[in-house]
Image 1 (cartoon, rainbow, N blue to C red):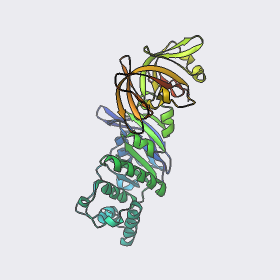
Image 2 (cartoon, rainbow, N blue to C red):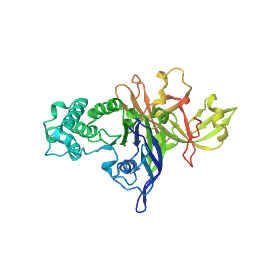
Image 3 (cartoon, one colour):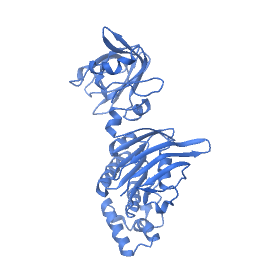
Image 4 (tube, rainbow, N blue to C red):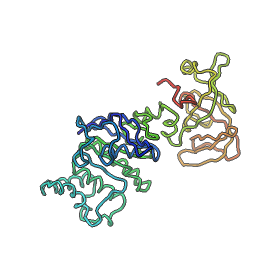
Length: 368
């Protein structure tokens, strides 16, 4: 078991800075997920830890050991790739045993470890098959099994579910979470899918353009995003944003977005009062916008009238694409809501969960 430390790590490819001053401490037995769009530096960060890329500047520790110049095979890590990278001519058993054979592990120990890992993953009946005889989900389990038998200090996962269909992805997500609990080992996982990150991680590290934006628990990232990028990336559908001005009127504070004006709750007034008269970015999540007749009790509502542009019936909820002037925004409303494109509807914003950001820095104005 081991912690992992990135200490002011940089990776440059010519003039391109792929990883920019990454500093993060991953605790022993933690499940940390790097998440972000393509090209944000998350996979490069993982490959630097694995030793598959050379660090330009900074230090990486596994436990207390500096591993900058340690060969990949000696870092006590195991990596599961997006492509699975199985040997097609070998059986499942031999694929899982291959790394141990290279290390001259005794046959009896190899047999025990392979069968134990196969039992954990539910693939004991597949040990004699070749990869071409397996489904995508089964191949993915074999790749994980090959990592498990090495009994590493740290598991690294590079988008391991991206080749699976949607249903299998959900199932395998749960299996990897259970595996983490069972093995009690440090997991570091890379994905572009924020749903994967939210459902699996102990903590999430959000990256953009090589820079670490925010590290926190999934719930805290959702409730208290540090900037516009994190707020828009975490949550599906993503947060709605409106250009607005913070104005005071009759002792009350309002967010004026031009086509609508909504009151800031009294308990948030003191937080935002220093910014009155300023331009702001107003953020509200789709799930915090309710059809007026089905609004949740106990919220601080602000009524907004909007035109329905598109409706998407999801079964357990309806996505409404609404227009306020020319600005489109999304609401997730009760499935009993009856409305059609072209109609006008009153919706209620739950202002208890509002967010304000500075337009220049895009950082939150919310006090956490």
